[in-house]
Image 1 (cartoon, one colour):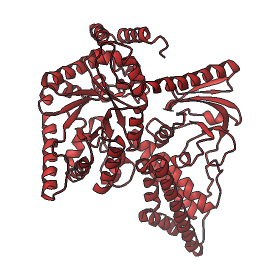
Image 2 (cartoon, rainbow, N blue to C red):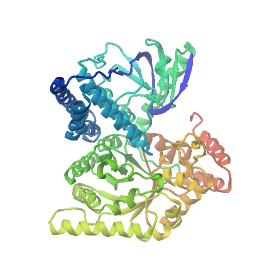
Image 3 (cartoon, rainbow, N blue to C red):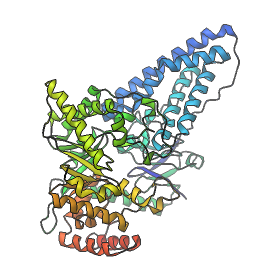
Image 4 (tube, rainbow, N blue to C red):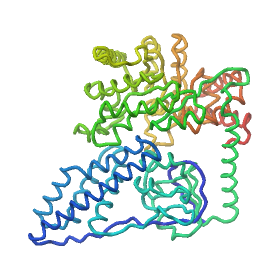
Length: 579
């Protein structure tokens, strides 16, 4: 029995036989051709590009039917690159000038692009290298006339083990026969992870060499919740993980029983539970989990899923879809929260050496007003269809906030002149994600309708820790005393000004922090939809008096370990079976 630790990409436990797929690497010799062969090679290239583009178009339609238009936009990048006349011209020139085969010229061109992306100092763009590799293999298959193994028509349930699982492959799998996925590479923000979570397929990625340790047909366990893969488990281990799987199923069933009950403490304090979403279609799942609204709709996926800026009409269509799925509940749309590193493919700019401290979020928007105004027009116009709120990310100074509000006012005036309807009393709020914003929260509260604490970035900036850096990730602790003091400061500032304050970082959906956050004064928590029932259950098991006592005690400690031990003990007191 061998246990391997990877990265949790999609929660759940899968137990079954492994199906190991090869990496589909094609050996392409550098065979020189005669000048007379050039037209035939270019014709082969054109036919392959046309066939690949048609395949991707069909994939996009399939993704749209299964997961909605926004998830399908992942394949818009594939389709647009394959159809890019610049790419075709570049490869044709390589064929003509170097007397290369179509396969060799195409492979060289794509490898260069992959190298350029991999050298960028940005996790998201680095992971787009896998999209480029997927495109390369698809087109090469048509050039070389090779068929890939068809895993869309499996006869028995399996766990797919592969070097990498391309989004285009995952979207076509027979969900009835794919129990789970394990890959050598990948991260939590990869398209593969996003789609696996959307499909509800347990997945562990970043296992480095898992394909070399499994021969296929062996029984394996994929624990996507804990990021673990076990090869050849013994009977006791299979029984233990089967119990975990059953417990998860029983817990989900039990949580379903409280779905329509309010999130209210034993001493009758009501707490509003909202959902964080990234794709418009996720709003449907949020409502299914009884979210009282959408507390954070991340819009940056619109800008990152394609190699061109989305139009006003395209953004409106997506926003209206989310509003429709929210079914009359409020929806907080956060304006684009990306940096120049992630937008280089749109505007051709140089990337920042340190993107977290560079031209990102509101700073970026304020320097690209045409793009920002188009974005705001789409949000405002969609607000005519529902209870839309607008929220600005990464505000650090009052001048940034005032500038952003002024641009919203300008866009409203333009819509008035064009007689286009929108919600004129739309609430305007901001994220509190830096120590500067937290310490100035009293001043900010005088100028916004609501505030939302983003503990992911607030923790990162307060502790100067990049949680994606494995060498320092252990120092990332949202329960650090400094972070807790900043949260308390923001809550107090909001209460003083009668401005609602929510918390939308990962802390909100973590059971360990639930009582502490309530004790710090928070009455609105926004989290991933699947986390809502668990947090609701805990709220209904505790009292506000108890939570406030926990918070007072935690704030007296000066060490993270003391605080985390306190929170674990207090959670077990109300929920002895907590993990």
